[in-house]
Image (cartoon, rainbow, N blue to C red; front, side):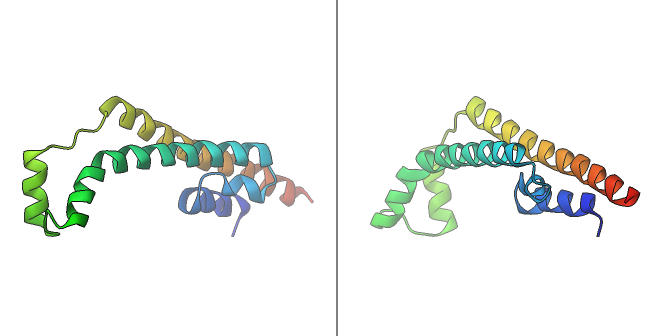
Length: 118
């Protein structure tokens, strides 16, 4: 398997920044991993914080754990996420992932080109 293919698959399927790690581009890898991780944490935190009251009602037995009871509760008390914040976080995640894949591919192409000249 070529270096470029391996790096793209690692960055796309495992985690953004892993492709950079195999080419020892540590600053890029750390930047991608940190940005992606922090953004993913903030995204999950936003969703969980909004759903927490519903989760507490299920835990206490106030609402049954079935789809109809949950749908009825959500219809009575809609869960509203901050659309701008969630959209911004989603864009950051997608851009970070895409940049990780593209940069890993670019690094892999360079590595493959230097390996073929040796």
